[in-house]
Amino acid sequence: MTTPFSLRIFVADGDPDGLRLVERSNWVGKALIFPRALLPQVKQRPELAQTGVYLLLGPREDGEGDKLYIGEGDPIRPRLESHYAQKDFWTRAICFVAAAGQLNKAHVQFLESNLVRLALAAKRVPLDNGNHPAEPTLHEADRADMMVFLDNMLGMLPVLGVHAFEQAPVREKGMGITTQLTCRGKGVVATGYEASQGFVVKAGSQAVADTVPSMQQHVRGFYDMRQELIANGVLVLAGSDGNPNYRFAQDYVFSAPSSAAAVVLGRSANGRIEWKDAQGHTLKELQEREAGA
Image: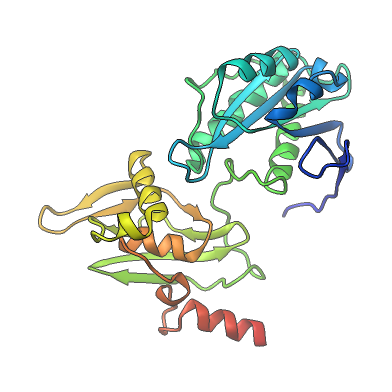
């Protein structure tokens, strides 16, 4: 069971899009969020003279969604200055630090390694990192402390608009439509369910082998998403030579049921109509029934 928590967000310069400092209840850590353009001013802050881990986010080359770089610094400031000069893609940064003396080089290398591992496993955002840094060996107590630090970071990031590390959640009662839903078309069948993170398509679900010709032109974002899922191994080619299809190699979270249905069916799709329960009721009908209960 997840534990409720609160965040305190301080808008340091009065600009809601400027520097924000975020603290979590009962935690020694702190997050700094700021746009790239403010780095020349923000770098003077004492927090960036500390050891920490950071995320750089910016648009992908195709303009669809974010790209991510994960790094660590001891201290952070020289690393950010280097990326300011040498990395073009990023437009905002999120830095995590702690009270003086709470984090050392090995600690942040541990955090960096595990963040990269989780992002690669989730396959939700492409990484700009060239390699997967090895996890350093930590004393048992230090490792336990860093797992708590990591869990607190991962709990905060979705609230801050970063979903790169989220795995498909376990279906729980009281969260959306808990009934298993099915999407069918062109000889394929996919199963999924609603969750707080979005719409989850389950591992083993099928997707059509080929998209309709108009998909690339009229719903290019969904087409590109599907191609990326094929490229990163979420969708793997399966079926017989006479009846090929793709299968989901893992549970995967989509932002909405329509994007999930479009990837499965290879065309534009209204997910609230395409996803149905065992009795043939659409997700739209189930949502309306639940809203009126």
